[in-house]
Length: 141
Image 1: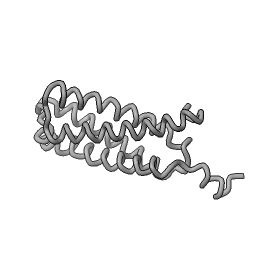
Image 2: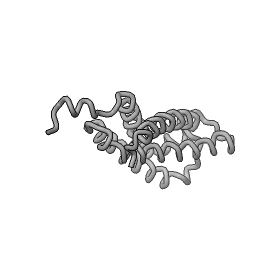
Image 3: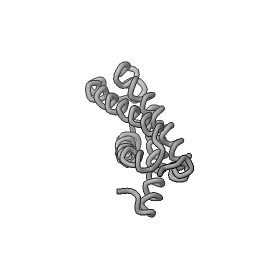
Image 4: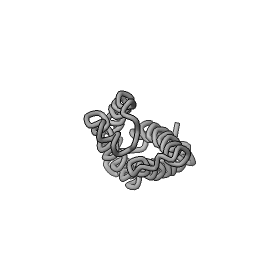
């Protein structure tokens, strides 16, 4: 029998919940402009206007991650959020690589790309910590 007490004991940590909130807000804050205001994103990032179609597709995917984050906020325990957390870790890790490439290796150090790099590093470390924490307990897969 699954009681309220049991569900409370199995709930995932508040720190992870805060990461999900931050990731969800960030997904909507970046995805919506990429889809509906791509010229603004081009101006902030210094990317080429030729990248707008790909940017809009990436924005749509990002909005989808935001929707997934909303569902994670309704979840009660790790088993209900783990797949989204692992996918978010992979997404933010790859975003870190991409932003590092543009900001550091290509020298496109615009405020928008620097912000993306900083947020991606923080989110990668945060999600990585929780995936590692649950992996140590044998609960990742």
